[in-house]
Length: 484
Image 1 (tube, rainbow, N blue to C red):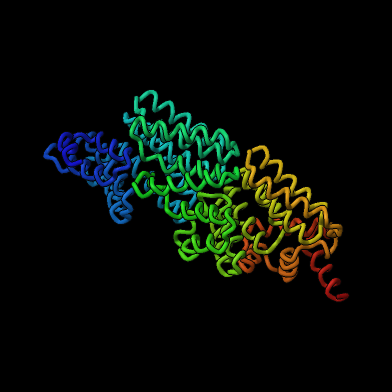
Image 2 (cartoon, helix red, strand yellow):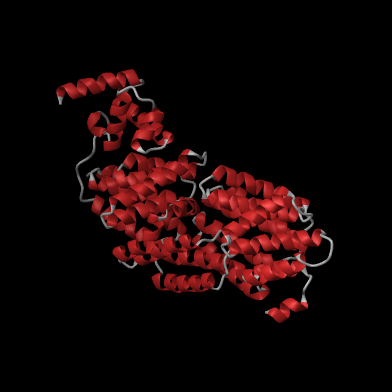
């Protein structure tokens, strides 16, 4: 490698090539060689500066990444060009995302795209859009994510930066999986791997492998899922990973794979570090819409309710500071699993933007209703989940729901649809708190719920009790308590 570097001592573009090859240490050395040279800083230095920042971030040097970002944004050298500003903004966005500041992360990415478009460097325009697409896909903003990927593809064609086509394809495969198009996701992910091999863009291998693992897992092809996951691990170990791709997301995926093999206790041990690292838990819950519900369910499976409740509170904190429906759905889903609250689970199903997440919430609601002998409503929820799973080709998930549907046919007793007996445990607690004169915001704080979730529960209470005001609720509660 050193011989190759010596052959290109002042080529800043080669530092980006090394980044694409998944060799951040070599990219850093190449960029430093350009920046430490005797020449007066030029636009070429900005290219090297941006590659250096990306390489340092990939190497996990948090302090170094922060110092370089501050240097670029502060304009303390002449390398403060649009390309380096764009990468600095994407780095700040990554930091904001990991800390749970979702709105700030999105705003910074929009700024990164604008800055990149002011640059003549195609790599900046593509890089910023790939980051933007990944974030939008995670939030369920599928149409905008598709537009951003189309723009990135056009930038690849116009700039001749063909190696980046592997990244565009990896982004498309993630979007297709999130949109419940599993067959398309598999084909596109394999195309990404092919492009990565042809153009030497190993940076995107892990993203494509992760999608292939998820597709195989949902499809019930466990041997294939295990093989893809093993190759994903190899790619991660080789450094073939984007800066935003974390080991925590891979750990979450591994826990799902182990649980699919029936080893719930072992799956929990795989995921245990996620519960115990509060700072690292937030990005995991943001990256995967059903992560909160899954980790909650996994903890409950081994009778670890405290860890389940930690996940619920973290999801609710993320939702409370955001206006994105999928985050609110994620929090409601996790809470519904812990509280066995079908209303919260149905609310999650209505708010999710990810079809498979919506199906998972419907499935969980149906299972709660089965256990409460509400066979009719259970079948409605389970059938909704089954329809989505079948459409997506998620055979393993569909088979699981079909088993639950068979269970529901043996249940005959129905839950009341109105009156006090129709309220869930959570709805009763909300009703009692509201009757005390507490505002919805205070109730949310007391019960570790988001304000939106409390609003939803109160609407359900009013509907079931056929009332329209808090005063009527207080009167009915007093009357109910006096006769019971």
